Image 1: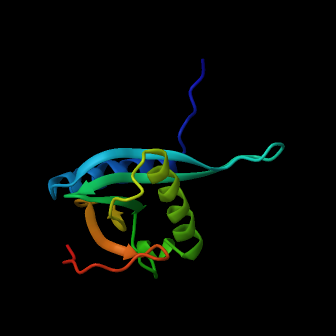
Image 2: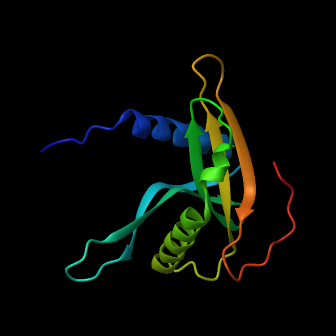
Length: 146
């Protein structure tokens, strides 16, 4: 048996995801799953297309798919800008597969982003962006940002 070594970037991301899950749990979210790999496409003779969901949680009765972005320092653009059009489309497809596989098609859901800043000195800073983007065909519901 062998183990795969995580790169420094993967370790940073995993640490950020743990902090994000703890933060969300502190807000009353129920964490249903973390680091879910979803099979998006599997054609014979082709490599499988996979998607990943960082955190799947419930905010009361709403299923929430949370993308976590972790950084060591601030840059010119905020970390959430990394959730671009391509990443959003991948998250929408992954969430649809997850919901379908678990029979959750009729449940309300949304997409949040949590950014985690882990400076070399000082405490981590967590920022939660509720309802960061909408999947096609989803109506925006009124809410209060945290």
